[in-house]
Image (cartoon, rainbow, N blue to C red; front, side, top):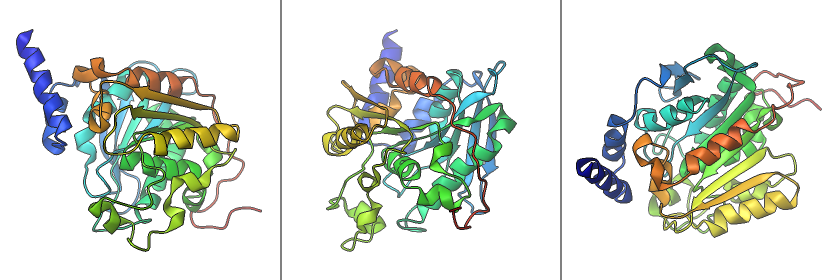
Length: 305
């Protein structure tokens, strides 16, 4: 027992130090491999990084199929790989959701906004193809952490990106943002400045600009003492503004976790850190199905009038 607690303490220290790949590798080594069916490296587009891994729950799906979650990881738009997030795929699949953990292009290959079409294309894949994996295409949720939460917010709130893929925001059952930046001009972080063309940062790059009563149902989770992304300016403000226009929002503040350990708490060895997985699972499973789309357009075509 003491040895296991020591391992957990080491993992927490690695997470707190933003150890990235080595931290997630250590966590993944402790994650079960028998709670899901994995289909790795599914292409959702022609680019080398337009791939996703599908984690499918075991057992019989409910009528209509399992809820589907497209997960977009963080890394300040500079780093990250889908294989680092096996713990997230396992967590969601073990709780009865089809998880699609997607790569997308990063800096310096691309800058804002070119990673957003990648994310929208991954979500479009889920909307079109999730039934192949026992998923319900009318119960698709886009979810992200940190920079990935920004990406998820833009796909869910700014209709341009799904429109370009021949889909509409109204096809989403909901979206989930964990510790996301949604209102971050002026940009302080030197790496983020490069991604967003500082000092000419486009005002339209900020998710807070896209408040609408047509936004999908929303779950926002934050570490109460997040030192990387201000939870009040970003998530609390976004929640308040969405609620003001009638969008159902669940907003959770979590004690005892930070910016990185919040997402780490989805991993089986670390779930005692926060109830975030339980809360997200309840949110996703409680969402009503999105209406059937009335229009399916060719990607890039003009929206119907």
